[in-house]
Length: 280
Image (cartoon, rainbow, N blue to C red):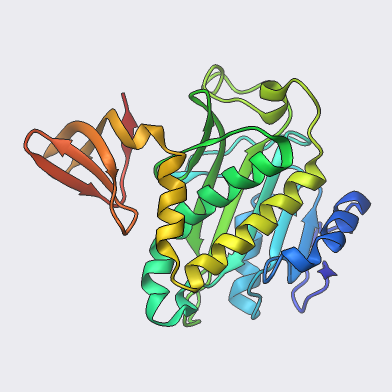
């Protein structure tokens, strides 16, 4: 495994902390494509931004960017992702699910769902804590947000198009901004004990490697079944969203085989593939 060694250099990158280096080296046989390169920053604006630059300039399937702190971390629709020093795991991975041949388009559409399953499974392995997933990209414990996922295209002319898969997992208790208090939680808050971030990182990468292989090999049913088993809110929850003709409201009715959320509105079922959704 290379650490901070690539044809692209980044100001502020630092040697991988010894505990992370050792943990990743010991787990190399379980990581598959993930971790082909590892770049670490004590502080960075956004790991997704760094990964996008790397993906646009080099062939770097499986490259990983890790930060101890993000000053401009973001979630869906440009929202800030609170990323204080020592508070969580902040990681971006470069993947190209479109290279899965005849499965490429579907693998790309389902990448975020597969990542949610992978991270929930990784947390359970690393800590013993059961984690729910919430459509389309969130991790929850007891109705409080534990983590999130953001998939973005890398840009450039490469075909198939690289995807930057970024994720953040809240690990340590921190003083959340007012808008997050009461809605966010952390692993250590839920468990009442310290969580070893090196172990969590290793299990996250190993689990992503397994579920990424599922995508590339077209094992979509395995991903969908695992996601449904961890998504109680996908059935019977009231939601509202905005359409071109105004607001709609309905009751969740599961996901289809493409990962779209199904919502029953009166006698019809709407298929939601993107957009802003509010859970009531």
